[in-house]
Length: 72
Image (cartoon, rainbow, N blue to C red; front, top):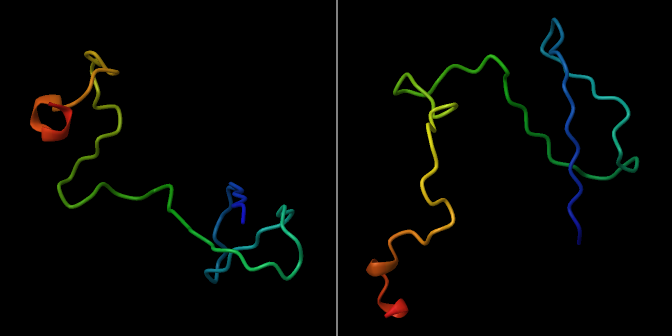
């Protein structure tokens, strides 16, 4: 079974309805729908991690390699 994904941007209508047209799926095919608000507020801490990385130091090096008994 292969998973096919499709991204689309839409605006919620006056009565809370959402109309999606031109989806690349067969009629009658069951699909999952996941809706995210573009105006979503940050989490309970009041901040997000977006744009918070200042620099990558050795991004391809193993992390906590000394902590794993199986690597010794």
